[in-house]
Length: 478
Image 1 (tube, rainbow, N blue to C red):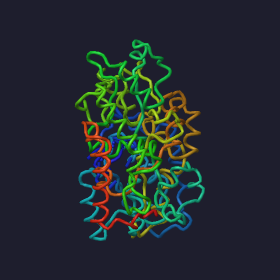
Image 2: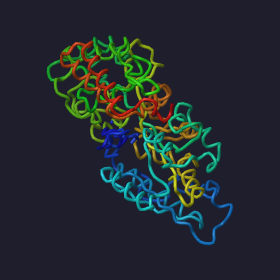
Image 3: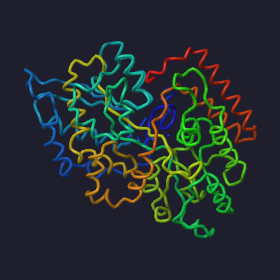
Image 4: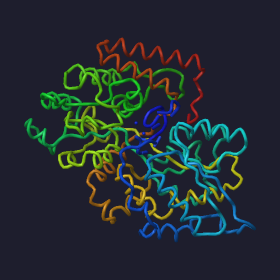
């Protein structure tokens, strides 16, 4: 899961205040997402993916066409994620270094809470790493300020054709690709208890598809000791977890494209605020959130019948609440009108980028191509370590998973890959203060403020922030 926006690890991972996290995640997103025990690949180099990765590197690295007089050493900084992710990075850095004699990748794992300070100090000293992990939300600003290089002329163009169309936009600024994605993590998935559905007279194979149905089912499912429904309730979690539902209700996010003013005083946002208000006031939700949004603890302990969480919760369920897994169904989050081709989730996640002052940009990009855009077996190995709770941005990797014994039989993975990710949107890149103004308004409405008053207050707060910070016309992707 991501480490951005103060959300999923701060994972962030569900947050670093300026905006994941393929983590994905986390949770979504940085920090442990419950992705679990040591991966099968972490202990050795005998797996098919390890040998395939090593053999694939020679053709993947553009640096080999002109052999340097001495080996080039390239610093690669990766933010600290799950232990299994760290082990995966180390495994394939070692494989790449052993596979050729031209480039030596030097990996440094940096804790998320130390990342900003360490990176700023390195940049000030002219010693920034040539390769770094970068969340989607930070790509546009980093590109506009020259902190990272475009990759179009540094990598094989075919690797960008392999990306899903909606993910291409995440890494594109002014028509150029500035990072290569590693993973995506949908922020919003609906987990539900099939056994409790059946006991309440509901069809466990037909979870609710509209907000109205969801609230109706939640009331029926609410029994002594069990709440029918749980979703984010506090402003911090609502700030990012509601983005997909903002798209769903209004078709856009809270600012105009030119960042000149708020765009929330409309029927879509009013319906969104009303949904959260009705859910909270119905009695089907706990008055106090049982755990942070990125933690599915309440559901795992049997205290909630329908829980909205990110894809990373799959790993937590499979590792921490194994006895519950057979009773769990998953589905896309209910939509305002039942149309499940409308977005209900945003996709956080992580990429690799080349520093704007890299001394060896071709070699750095060559390693990124090897690791993230080369042999699909390398990335399948990663997704296995994540219990398939994170997802591929590449078509060829998903195609290869169809013949992988573990991936092909994972029904949860297939449902999210086919029914949620294709319709999901990118997280916004505007300042976190805008998201917090909206989420504070939602929380206020949940606790009794009228929807109109909550909307008006959020609108004023956003417009005041825009004016004070001269935000109009500064959208780096506009």
